[in-house]
Structures are given as structure tokens and as C-alpha cells.
Image (cartoon, rainbow, N blue to C red; front, side, top):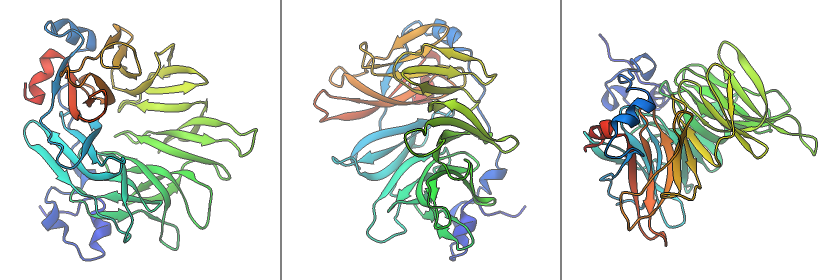
Length: 362
């Protein structure tokens, strides 16, 4: 069986890079996307978590050699991804960590001399997306940049790449010389570039699931009568206006957390909507567990679920009493950072049910 070129390396191959030397695994779009056997539902998992019914909290052994850590995601195979930033918040490097492989650090390189990369998202394969000098860029796991191009002139998209899924489908917001409005887009190494929102409108695609569901927002028109609406897009169904609102988080199976006015909602994959979510939801998993930021209890964040209400999260280190949470996976594992009151020290932490702690080396 011949080794084939992974996604996006097809693009890089045009400038003479050898994909076989770089990644012998084959194309991501043809690799099996294996989800681990799911744990029991959150209520059962909590009932078995007798030592820590609000989730056990652990510091992860991620050395902040490249600056202060900021987490981006935790995958179902317990891999944590994030960035190291400097004191001004500028990215220095990206990292991934698992209990089996430890910390892997990479510096995304710039394709434009003198410009600083900004990374907004990544996938479990180590590919990253973001922007450099206001142009949409992706990066391979070794930090090689791939400017995203579109149109007959093959020009680099002006804008941001916000998210990438396990099949290297990239979504974001961008424009071109042919259409100067910043619109939601989708890009794939085989299928190219396409706008997702209607002509003569602006917007952004912010999330893309492994099944290809894209969620974002679009502005129905410019001017004082214009309004931001949430939208969804699928290959089969195309663009769908979901009414006024903004998305806050999307799970891989299609749970969507969004706000409309000053209220927060959870829309389930079957279309039913749960209202009255606590302020401020930031992420949701396949069970409908929602990470809530800015609460008064614990370290300042918690997890809400229809079956158990709002459970506060607590810092694993009393010297670092505050927390900033970014992600939750379908196992109910939560990742973020804990930090000191003056912000001088920050560490990566995980909150997990007792029965899942072994996945993080405990």
C-alpha cells in the first residue's frame, strides 16, 4: 500500500516539500476517526466519583518554558492543546500534551516576513489555524505555514481562520479583491474555498464539527437596521438562518450554546431548546454539559448540566485560586488554567470525574 500525502501537504508539495518524510500516516481525510468508547452518562459518572463529586482537579505537568500557558481544547483521547503567550498576550509557541507522550511544543512560522502569527484554533492532529498580517493561515504539526488561497487569482484570503476539524476542513471570516466584505468561509485542501453566507452581507464561521456542521453568525444588512443572526451550514442542507443571536460553543454531535439579547440557551441536536442557562457559557460537550465562566463560587467557573445543575470547579492549588476554562470533551473532562490573584503565576489544570483520572496520569 502506497503512502499518500496528508491534507494541506498537497499544497506544500507544490513548493518541493516531501510529505512522506514529514508524516507517514496517510491523508487525514482517509484516517479512521476513532472515538474512544464513551463513558457512562454524566449522572452515573458523578455518582461513581465519590471522592470528588464536583470533579477531581489536577495540575498538569506542562512546563511553561515558552511563556504563560493558555489552553484551547481537550480531545476525547485526553490530549490538551494550547498556546504559550508573552506578557503582552502575543503567542510564542503552541503546545499539545498527553499523559503518554508528554509536552510537544512547536513554533508556527510566518509566511510573511516580519509579521507575527496569531493562532485561534487547532485539531487533534496538531494542525493549527489563525492569521498572519490580517491574512488567513493554517499550520502543519511541524509549524509549516499554509496561506489559504481563493479565487481565480489564487490570492491569500484576507481575514482569519477560526477553526479546523479532524478532516482539515477550515472555517473563518475573510474577504478577497472580488468581494471586499468580510464573510463566513469554508476551505478544504481538495474542495477549495467557498463563502457560506449570502452575498452583500458580512459574518464569520466560528466552529466546525467532525461531521462538517459549521456554526457562526452573519449580519443581515449593514447600517442601523442590520442585525446579527446565528447561522448553521451543512454540505447537504447549505446555509440556514437560525434567527437573532450569537454562538458561544458547539459540541461535536451538534449541541449549540448561544445567546439572544441577554439570555443564554442550549439547543440540542434534535432541535429542542433549553433556556435559562447561567451566565456565562463558554463551551459544551456531546452530553449537553456546559462550561460556565464568571461565577462566584469555587475558582470562578463551573459546569452546568440539566441533570445536576451548576457544579463549581475548585482549584487544585490554593496558591492559584482563580481559573479560566476553555473546553470540555464528551468524557466530561474540563481544561483551563489556574492563576494567582496578581496573575504572576499560571498553570494548566484539568477537572475530571474520579473514574477518568487515569487518562491524565492519576
